[in-house]
Image (cartoon, rainbow over all chains, first blue to last red; front, side, top):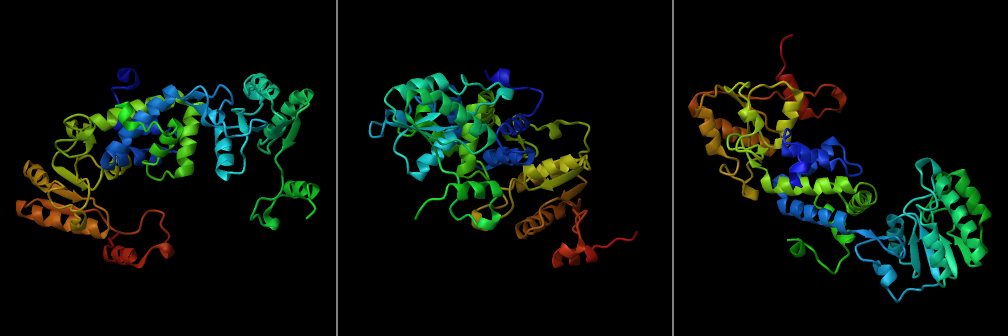
Length: 203
Length: 203
């Protein structure tokens, strides 16, 4: 396996530096700094990273219930019997799920689309798991919260899901759009302000 | 080996994210982005990185002649018979050596200190390989170029090396200090300007 990866012409250090470029936001200088840092100062950290990387790439798959990344058949959240099963929150990615979990404001279950609808990139309803989502919805879900990004793709995906789920007669909501906490009004774009004013609430 | 590294209590994804923190300049958000990027989009890149990391941590040592990082007994530069053996350039780290090589201005050999003298951190003459350097110098070196950083530690190290090598009667030089190319005078510190004026040359 090692021989299939290595190009024996190039020094191992150069190959390692080049391999670090697969990480997001890592350019040539950063990759070189990573290689040299590990070799000069933290070989045990480097070996630990290698082992975990290899194991994670091999063993982490998708939860059979919510499609989140996990190494078991069901993720921690789906296995957690203490969480409400009647509310289902739809997110685009594992990163979005982690952000909501960190806010500690939600105690229901999730469904992870692993992307947004994008006909140009060949991502259709099947890729975002619509069939799986519909079976989840039929199994006792009372409210579906669409927590997708407020982008063109996110909006289109939210609309598609809402239309697909509507025949089941369950409540469908969308997380609020408005000004973020601490947001200074003068720096907020016009579309967001329009949404915020339109969505105003009595106090 | 895998079992000794894994803490079975924590999800593998969290462990991988935490392991990425050993890289320089990688914080919690960046580490999470790296884990998710590889798992969602580039598993083959992740596996390649794991293999090269493991192999590099195991196999890369120091060149027996110049102390640079390499996986053989002698590095590419020391093995290269086309390079002058009478000039020896002293650098602090492999990164400095790479920077000089990339400038393509030097055709001699190197000696890598792998640090600078620092009594507080326990880095003495032995750690920077003074004995090895002296034997190199005795083997036909005519000029020793001190290409160490212009820091307090760098200056002290340069001074120590110069004094150690002086009895051998070989020429000892220090790379020029002055304003960098493209440097705007008004933004350059006073000490650098003083060095630049002192070191002025006829044109």
